[in-house]
Length: 285
Image (cartoon, rainbow, N blue to C red; front, side):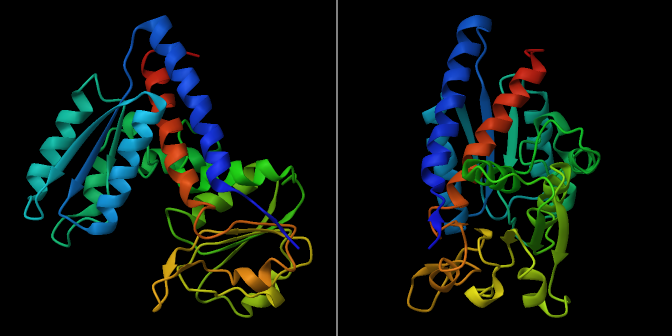
């Protein structure tokens, strides 16, 4: 029976460490740390995420600046706001809540954020730095997953690591982080033949595809560490992951629940990136 990896507990520990460091930085250097969150339109899920980010800022001692724009906001208006935030010394991190309304160019918006303030690590400059292993920021979800794996005490070096999903936000950067820790990495996706065969090889299995219960217990190696990034709502209203938790927990040594696993870590790592951005700006080691 698997040990449950408690994302809420690990997230709380990370935020506590950030709060302590933030207080020390404020006391020593007299600087305020600020995160600007831009939300366009009124998507209910995005609104929940933004509110959670504001709460996290309060918890760690940051100032949060919210810019709630109407769904009719033009590309030019959004880019003007980002330009203003790029130049604002009170803002250390800029986050534009995705997805954006269809008429806006997501790629152009991401590219307009200064790489030094891109705390989501979506800008091509930061993506390239992750590739070569010389990064300041990591995408929040993969960084959070690395913290969760570390919390198990399982070493990544030399392990068979399988990542199911190849998105720019999770799958691709996740595979690079595991590679930087000397894992042997396989990336699977919708065109992969015999997914089960690949999954059964994994000492560490990360599943991030958005398909409810895609990976079942019989696809999991005995004693594997299983990280479920999926967050799917079933017809009965219940949340479930991309892994069939009940059957998987019989085989895994460690497994993340849904909810309460990867989710809380994403916002904790966003806070960590914002603190890092402030330290880099002010030349603080």
